[in-house]
Image 1 (spheres, rainbow, N blue to C red):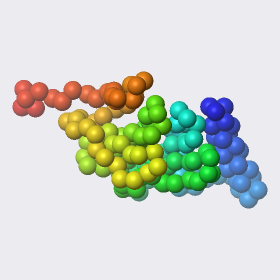
Image 2 (image 1 turned 60 degrees about the vertical axis):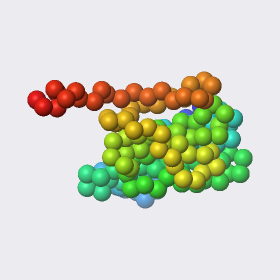
Image 3 (image 1 turned 90 degrees about the horizontal axis):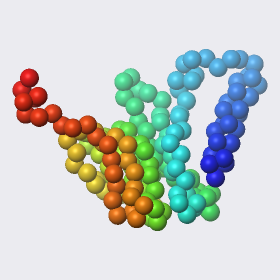
Image 4 (image 1 turned 90 degrees about the vertical axis):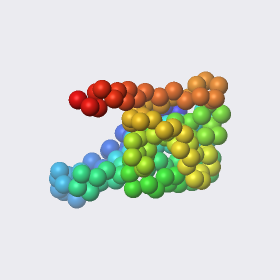
Length: 158
């Protein structure tokens, strides 16, 4: 399955290059900046879904990325998140029923959970600093994450 995803990226890159050649014009930097970016492809453990993030072209200093899911059985592609902030790092639970992701929709980046079939995201963490990378435990009962320590009162005073 990982080879399939790599092949998909290669084909998309090739298609972009061919489209530019067909138009007999090289791709300009401003055209590249206007493209959506696809990242962090995650195949569910049961192989039924593929989650990934799509980053919209930047608007000033603001970046927006959302989680999308492709159902490999029905061939349906759905946008799972629509917050005007950054939703990233989609990670499937070991039983493929839940999708965890990191979002800064309420300030500092936190972990949110979504049912595999879509729905409303539920905030899981209340970290004082941004949540970094996340990973499910093998039994699916816990999620580990990396985050910097919050400054102590003494450090804040300085």
